[in-house]
Amino acid sequence: MRESIIIYGSRYGTARRYAERLAEMTGIRCIGHKDLKKADDYGRIIYVGALYAGSVLGLKALANELSDQELIIVTVGLVDPQDEANVRYIRQNIRSQIPARLYDERRIFHLRGAIDYGTMGLKHRLMMAFMHSRLAKMPEDKLNAEARVILETYGKSVDLTDFEGLDKIKELII
Ligand SMILES: Cc1cc2nc3c(=O)[nH]c(=O)nc-3n(C[C@H](O)[C@H](O)[C@H](O)COP(=O)(O)O)c2cc1C
Image (cartoon, rainbow, N blue to C red; front, top):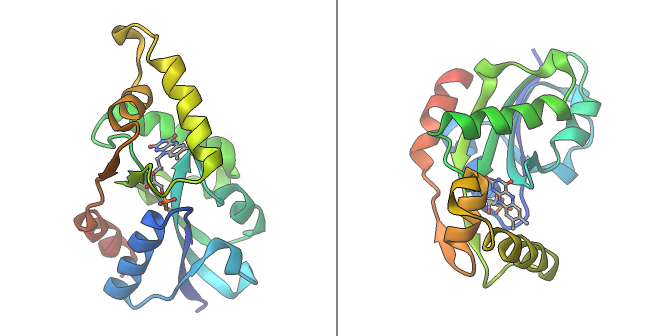
């Protein structure tokens, strides 16, 4: 049987930390998405990817490399996955990023991430400043969950990571 691997797509380290902790919990090796050489060597891929503007970082490129592998997707983002509307929105985006045969809702999980404007790169800071100035002018009742979280966390350092969320993923994979 081909082995399993945990792959992370992370810009500032939150998704990487989740992936590393899951690797400790399961004994499965973990690597960054840019370090994957040959996807065919693996029978099962657990992809832990950060959400950026609705998309899972690195997922689309990985999915194009896959043939018959089992794919488990773990998203890491700031919006609250307890809210069904958020989950629907994230999943719609995943559906548009990967081939239909890889899309299996029993194998998709959502965890909360962190943001720190102190360490954020210039491009992301400018994106957030632009979005914030646009959203701040919108009436409260027109704001969706993503907009609210941007406004609430703007300029701050907020860490919502919760490693207990990994337990249900561990149950599925071992
Ligand atoms: C430019 C930008 C866009 C983001 N877009 C989303 C988003 O669409 N949905 C979400 O839940 N979180 C979003 N986030 C928050 C990140 O997903 C969160 O900070 C995550 O923990 C980053 O993971 P990383 O540290 O592994 O890069 C965004 C953050 C930035 C800076």
